[in-house]
Amino acid sequence: MRVRTLRAVDRAPTGSGELPPEDAPAAPWEERALGALGAAVDAAALRAAALVVEKALIPTPESLAAIPQTAGALLDPALLAAPRRFFSFLDEPRSLGAVETRSRRRRLPGGRVLAHRVESAYQPFEGGATAPSPGPVPVTRWVHDAAAPATIVALHGFGMGRPDFDAGFLLAARWFEVGYDVALPALPGHGVRKPADARLSGQVFTIPHVARLAEAVREAVYEVDLVVRWLRAETGRPVGLLGISLGGYVTALAAGLLDDLAFAIPVAAPVDMGDMAWRFLQRTRYAREGLPGVPDAATLRRAFRVHSPLAHPLRLPRERVLIAAARGDRIVPPQHPLHLARHWGDAEVRWLAGGHLALFGRQALRDAVLAHLRGLGHS
Image (tube, rainbow, N blue to C red; front, side):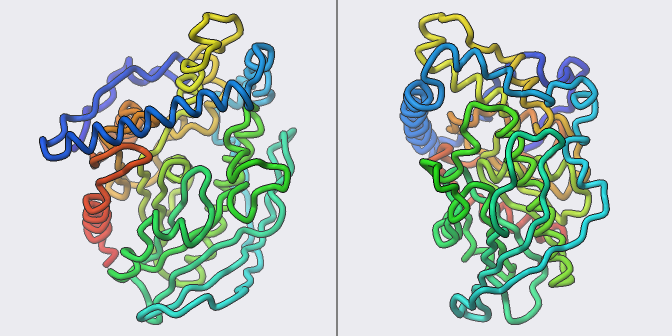
């Protein structure tokens, strides 16, 4: 489907309040039960997440009230007015780092799976809150013996980062089977890149510190750009992004920062982490009991603005992007993909069955992605 073009009121800057509620299009009758099941799974996960927030991430009202102050330089009016400055490395000369092929992992029919380590020269934002992730970027590649029409860089979701698991979740075998090469990088703080003191993979993307989370997003963009440029030089073929959940967020953001992607396909992707943070906080006892210090939606959206995909205009031709979302998604509600579609000038949204954690529309997703890529001539 396509959605209406933004009216002037819709173009209010990020930070004006919560994303207004919107509904996904009505599901066909045969998908309604799957949507309800997916929504129920998501609702249970949200209840559990609220307990984690209360017990571990934000254990006191004081720590809750301190969250906006952790934004630091991200609230600089000059930066808010020109958020691309947060990613200034994209407009500077940058070379490719050394790439090491550590092992030939296994053969595939017509190809092989390789493990690479890509050296990164990433430096934090001026006055940044954290040091770069240690070590090079691990990338697992499914490579055909003959030249493929394009490479799909598949970006995993939060808590993932293990190549064998990611490959199954991101449908690597399906893309490879129909002729595409696939690259699976591990995002900062995930998988083998999880810091020794972290409790879970990707913990850096959950900590209640605005600047540190922003730094993790910034580093992810740097590394995705690095991997895309390396693969394009290595293969001489088009390279695009397909990401799910957190990987979809990075994909949508990259589409507003990079103009040389062959395609960008965010799946079940949030587009405003400030809005997401507010929705999680609304489920905690702090909000239920009306305790002081709970940041409002406008404050949180302003704090997370510089890396929201809604703060960066689409740099790709609109026909290169495709948005996929689940009708029953309760973790990333429908207003996120709908706002992104309007922000991208009435981009196409493909609605899938199920929810965020129980996505049942995988066949529909496969069909939509393949039709999209073939329509772009990548076949």
